[in-house]
Image (cartoon, rainbow, N blue to C red):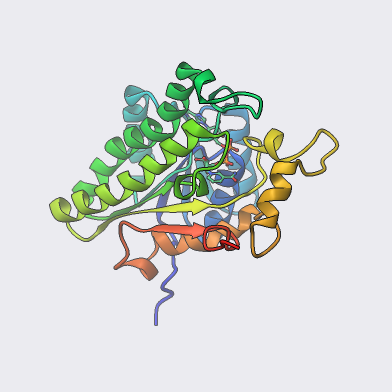
Length: 270
Ligand SMILES: NC(=O)c1ccc[n+]([C@@H]2O[C@H](COP(=O)([O-])OP(=O)(O)OC[C@H]3O[C@@H](n4cnc5c(N)ncnc54)[C@H](O)[C@@H]3O)[C@@H](O)[C@H]2O)c1
């Protein structure tokens, strides 16, 4: 039987592909033979990842983007189609929390900075809607393509402090289900949309919340670990298998799901 999880020669766009989770996923999929398109606003690290992928014999290209700018995304699409001629998968990984959009322990919801809240919703929700609208059009014309959105544990169980981020990620989970129906009904079962909800992975966006300057865990990280049956944070490589599954034939009857990858955090009560 053919390898159900094969991603060889698939053209995979990763927005936020220069970030901690995105770059690990990019490198993994490249080693499996996928052609990787890194879209990010971080030029240096984006190009660096392409270099590293090429050094190990993989295929990758970087394009500067802003996931909030449809014109730029349309230009990205033209450039990608010129280079590779098709788009097989879109991973909407650009996103993250923003310090100003949180409620500090000594503050309340009445201190909320509404502009910061708007910005975090913009990046995490509109920053997924816009690339989806632009790139899924190509998938619709191909009658084939898979999308993986990045939700979060905070969408499933509101976490203290990250009020705007959690709301935006909850919207991503809902949008994922909406798009699954919309695209399959109108363009056929070749189009699938799923999401992953990563639990707690130490990356730049949460480092200040999870670690002290000396690297030790903050009380918040200790509390996360205490609530996780695996008793530890995740490492980015623990997302690779789920992503590969969701963009390969292995999941060909799977759409509209949110795959939770969290060491049991969501399932656990007491
Ligand atoms: N790290 C975690 O524990 C965790 C948990 C759950 C969900 N997530 C989600 O996973 C995704 C990746 O997270 P990460 O930890 O790798 O974050 P990260 O901050 O390391 O990477 C995010 C990337 O997005 C890029 N980006 C930001 N705004 C952009 C814009 N307007 N246009 C283009 N690129 C832009 C950044 O340059 C960066 O490279 C995010 O959506 C995040 O919310 C992360």
